[in-house]
Length: 66
Image (cartoon, rainbow, N blue to C red; front, side, top):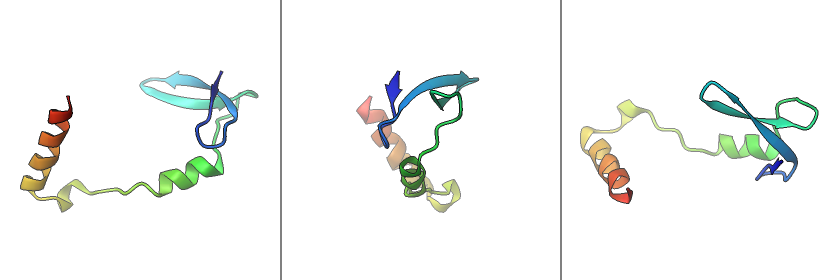
């Protein structure tokens, strides 16, 4: 059994296609308030809002880490 990193409840993981879904002990999908508020705080960017130079800079930084 794994623990949710947001609320520390015991969960297990179910793989559906290429996506993993957290499942609680009773078989329902695990969705805690801490996780939902954390997902809302993620900054989302539109690809069209970036210039070609900025995209190139991000791609080079990603490739350097490898």
